[in-house]
Length: 303
Image 1: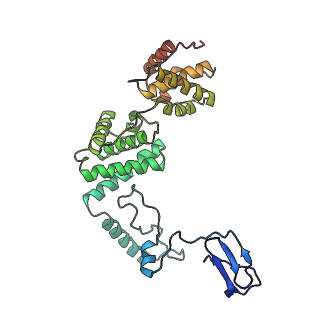
Image 2 (image 1 turned 180 degrees about the vertical axis):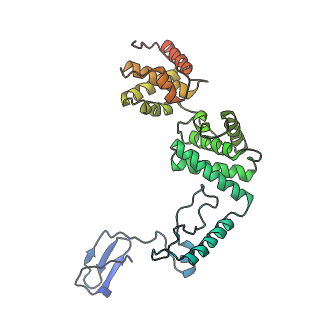
Image 3 (image 1 turned 30 degrees about the horizontal axis):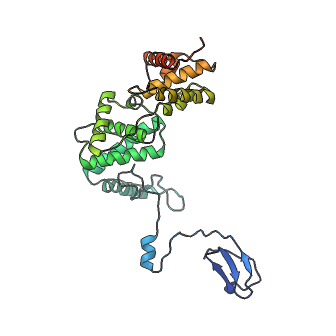
């Protein structure tokens, strides 16, 4: 029964709570004293102490970005007691020893050590790329599966982490290219691509095909273009798909060319150099895709 002080003339011992209706009712008069009461308790029921202990849950949600899933606790670094007072020097040194041994006992084997290093690297790269939490967690799950299967042996942790992030971005349709991800690592794009192919092959991951339309909003936003340009660019890409022009083409390059054409048509002009830099492709790529789109779709771009 929710803890609630009910203002009523009925004796407190005669007031009951109807769980099915969310109402306080007086047994003597049948009066509904309060209705639509929100139950703040757990959504489960338990009938024995053992069942209650088994079903109760505490702590933060589990996360694959932590080597033990977030099940263990951490001794705080603030060196303060339960009342918020700073500990004495002798006690602080004692807590420091506890903390050191607690950290050592959390990581017990080579897999845990590997995942801990990878988690820190993953957090660094993902933060620099501005990736959402869901992508980080999916990448961490992919990395953990690869470690447990022994697929990362002999590979740099940084390369596998970058490849796992790229896989997660593709799965969640986050427009990030291999070039963008690899620039935040010390390894080359070629090595990240090799690790990406390794993960896909060893873990049997099905990667959705990149859609050029996914890159359009990001490119337009970075260039300060309006929503009309975004819509026009996506329409151009859809026409190109129907004509078979997108097969085998780099999606980022196609998106960049479509944004450039749409901006020109709607008089929000940007240079090919600016568009290429934002999209992470070369000016030559933008120029070639621009020529193909304008020629085959018969688009008259104002000069």
